[in-house]
Amino acid sequence: MDSRAVRTFRVFVVVTAVVAIALGIVAVVWPRPTLALLAVVFGVYLVVSGALRVFAAVRGHGTAPVWRWSSGVVGVLVGLAGLLCLVDPAVPLVVYAVLTGVGFIVEGAVSIVGAVVGHPGSSRVPTAVSGVLSVLGGVAVLLAPTLALAVFTVLAGIALVVVGAAALLLLPPRAAARR
Picture 1 (cartoon, rainbow, N blue to C red):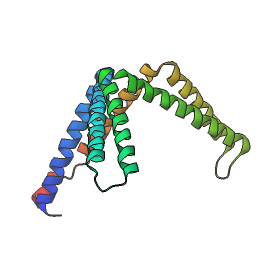
Picture 2: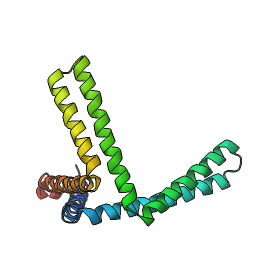
Picture 3: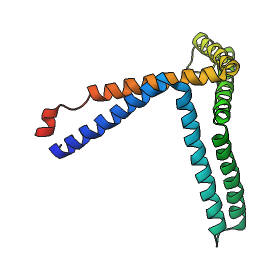
């Protein structure tokens, strides 16, 4: 690999690793404000996305009217969802937590059924244990969705710190950049 390419790669890795570590530390130290900021960013994205969809529907001359109407309606709904995120950032976060809890319960129930009936390629006991743990995790998330979100954020922050540190440790040596 040419030395300029190695130097460029090193800079890219260092910058992304440092950003990952910094964001990870912020997420671990301030999980709730981090979540609120993410909800606001998501809200802005939804408002812009909805507005662009409505704009495309209005300006979509020559396209089928059914596409224009459906795109416009979806754009309005997406924009309203974004406004809801901006007005009260906790709402989309709690909805996310509830959906996650329900997903854990459904996954657990499916695993338990799979353990009872048995399916090829899996052992019944680990599948049943996994299913029960998933159901219990889902119930815990539904009982304390805000705490669950904080825990998810802290774990994601830890993962960012670990991944960033690992990237720095796995950098190609500087000697490779000089060759």
